[in-house]
Length: 298
Image (cartoon, rainbow, N blue to C red):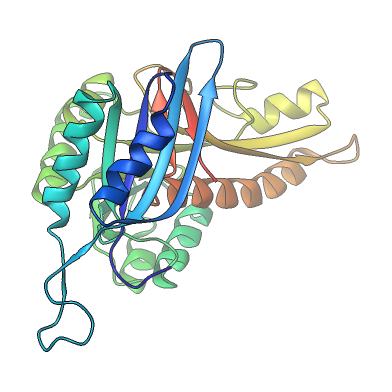
């Protein structure tokens, strides 16, 4: 991968002949270099999906000339490609750049395994983002957050204060420019009003293989049913609890010899890896949402 910033486009719309060639041609004609391209066709719905990443052309003198070359204006290139995709191809498009570092907030309660995993991966440089707030409805993880150099904000929530607290949380999100919220076992349901007003993605980890065992205490539900597989699901939060578009899932085998605590312990490992992968895919621009489904590009 070049050290220069790249552009990434996620497109979807009615399938038609020549889409791949037209996209590649547009990039080639402007001196760009395609680094990755992947596409998928939903034959039943007749919808075409594509993710393409390219290095834009450079402006200025060529190699050997005194003055350095400079990258094109990435924002202008994004706007130009968006207009091409919408007007010429009839496609919906979302643009991002490898130079982007979205501002992220992590919402937590008392369980700390997902939070520590995310924070450690972020410190290691696994996530191309800036974590600008850790929001907790309990103070338990305040010191842990501070240990990672992260800002912790405590918003205690009760049934009576939920509306007022969400208004304060939204104000904080706007103040810090948050573009993604990650619910790291945050044990409060964000209201439809909050999600609508936030207007940006919210990724949740559910400690179950949805749609099975939605709601609370899924490992207890699974143990009572004598399941042979337990799982975890990362999905985008919507107004319908645990029914948002699924980003990633994984499972582990269990037997009759495993008690509830065994299931919980194994489930924690799944929750950490599944949530981390979903966040990484989202930040890398690999998740395309349409309807209540996702296409996740390799």
